[in-house]
Image 1 (tube, rainbow, N blue to C red):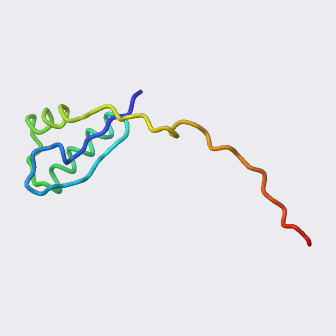
Image 2: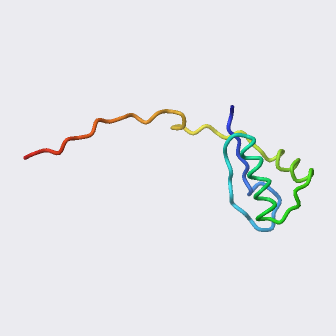
Image 3: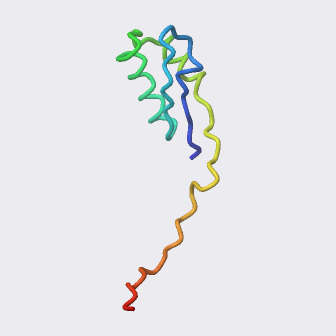
Length: 80
């Protein structure tokens, strides 16, 4: 499943909110609705949910995301 983002800077707002939410689509959608209601004072309505759905975007893949970090053997302290 592809990750989605919702960037509050792209939503109509007088508060200039800079929050960006990213994750799986349902997570982002629910968090964005809760944020719009609790922080921005919007009413949880069909219109709000439709606007938020329209603002969801595919998250750009990060260069290092999804690749395991190489494991290194612990270094033994030198005894000089």
